[in-house]
Length: 125
Image (tube, rainbow, N blue to C red; front, side):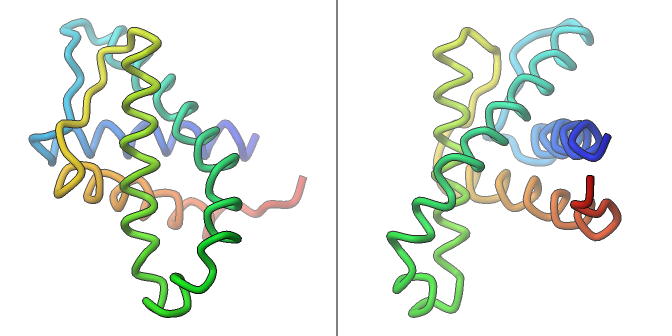
């Protein structure tokens, strides 16, 4: 149940990012298409984060220490751009125009929402 809640929160955070940041767009007019796209992109972003983030953190550990963790903003933005590219390859109408400020701010919004839901929902299954 926790996974579904996190997935839904990520989809809502993606919708919020599209509403607040002009460089992140859903290019479909139907509400059902928008909801389906947001759910699919939330899943893509979750898989990208689950697979690549640990590898990047391990390889770039020194950069995380040296920058006091601020490099994470750049990494999250890059992963957000990668999720947008994968969505485009799958034909989903979700685009992120540029790395700064769109991808970084979008990843920050999704990251803050994920942090908030992790405070409420425990990882115990």
